[in-house]
Picture 1 (cartoon, helix red, strand yellow):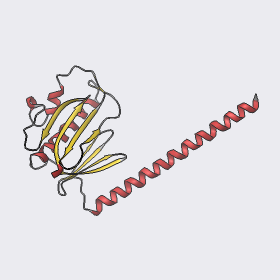
Picture 2 (picture 1 turned 60 degrees about the vertical axis):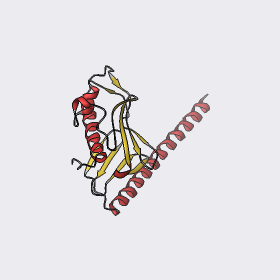
Picture 3 (picture 1 turned 30 degrees about the vertical axis):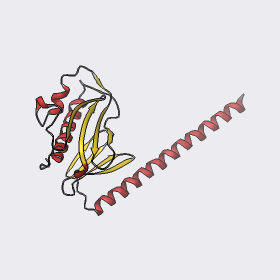
Picture 4 (picture 1 turned 90 degrees about the horizontal axis):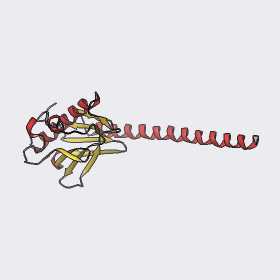
Length: 185
């Protein structure tokens, strides 16, 4: 009986060590990846005029180079302003705001430009938001979908108004890009 307990303890210890080693390697690889990406961005003169940070993605907007860099590990994507044809803000599979090149703002009309997302979500009765996403449709590339939250968000939490403010800021920037206006900093 004692030999089997020792054997199980040794196997369990080996498994724990393997898990720790793989986590350390993964962390090193992530740091190396981010370092390389930052170097590449600085080589092209990237300057993040705007940063909008969500729990699962960071969006850096450079108004000089006219690109958006989406940092959604392991994806690190570049989107040229001129390639954006349309976008949609999605809460739990429902489009709460969308806009396309040359169109007026379609979602959240009652609240107007800034605050459109806050206005369009106030009528919903669901207590918990499971998923927040943005779809960006491009002219010459496939559409992109970014999930922006890692856990469900309660509408009565302190986190919810901050999420709506970030979504409003992002939609204001995307509206400006689509309508060829000056982007707010």
